[in-house]
Image 1 (cartoon, rainbow, N blue to C red):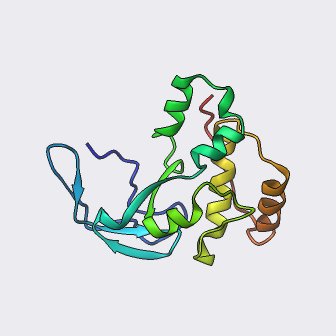
Image 2 (image 1 turned 90 degrees about the horizontal axis):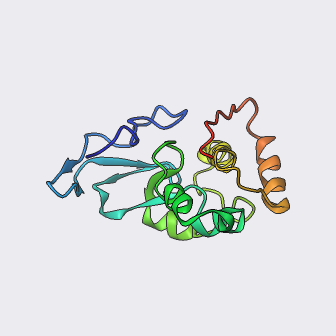
Length: 158
């Protein structure tokens, strides 16, 4: 069943992520709907051209401390439905472009979504008590100068 995770609006955006809602078959597979990819600032018809992105890629999480977690903790992280910022539907093209890169190497192609991306990156890193390396920190700090008064609210997962 779809959960409330796919909120109709982005965190601080008036653009709906998807509208109308997709159809769901008995195996919980989705079809149809209109989806918003905030990385690209574009709408996509149907889910076929979308990927679900881990805001903090699994490889980056591993390098940032997840390697010390139990297999069960890593599984909970990989399927984190407790924070709508952890997993996000984006175009396959932007997800492949991002790959396992952090903000020091990759930011969304849509300039208007970079502040949200950076604040959400910090939120998920904090939520899971993952380390931030010096290059990542420098990039996030530089980005923050262009994003005044961007609050970051976090509910810890661990």
